[in-house]
Length: 117
Image (cartoon, rainbow, N blue to C red; front, top):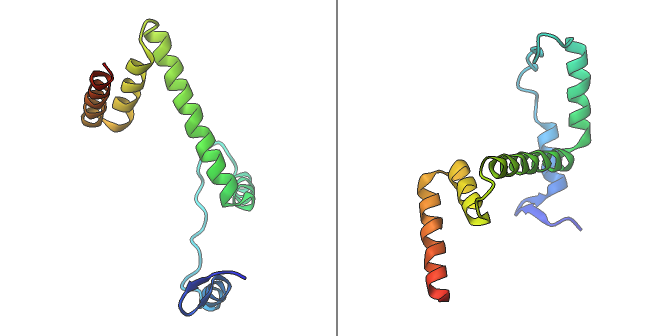
């Protein structure tokens, strides 16, 4: 049995209520995303992406994000061949989250190293 979404009913009941609501307005006509691709091709492409579902789109997003991180790591290692893994990771933190967090992480790493001695 599906757990209740709210005190009033189940998730299925919530979807039925949403489906029964009147349409507020007609969807806006589709605008081209690219100048060199026909609108019909874009429409078919977007329908295909929507049909794959949210789980697939999330997977692809995470996969692409991971590929970007791997590319950044490879570029850093080419530019700084003698850098340690810690130096590389601090650079990644600095690039992604900013100097403030990178300084705090670096300070914490020093504290841990001092405590281990």
